[in-house]
Length: 129
Image (cartoon, rainbow, N blue to C red; front, side, top):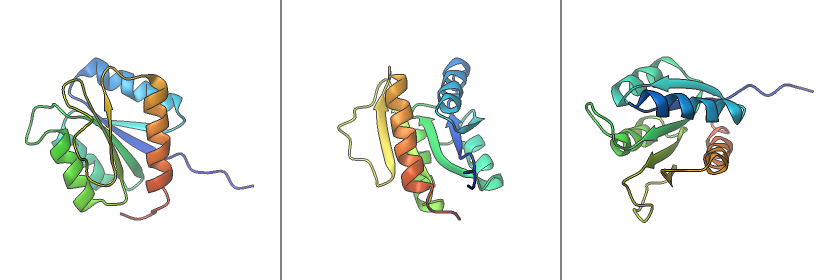
């Protein structure tokens, strides 16, 4: 029986504590967690690593772009990567592009894990990006 490789999820959040909490959630769900402090850092990681299947990002971040702009860029440049965005301010009623899921803060552990697994199953099937 072949052992499935552990998929990587990139956590993007400028808040240190939220980034660490999110990393713990990702690891508890059975994924490899990689982190970035903003969109520019996330893009650098995505350019360097080919094993990332989902990006879990906050919407509000300082830097050259926010989490929604990052999600749109990922959809254009790396369409085989799913994106989970979160915010305490945004509304889940917004129409999101294909491949982008939204969860409102504060969120439950079960909700995050379920979304990460759904996205990784949907996008993990696409091997190259």
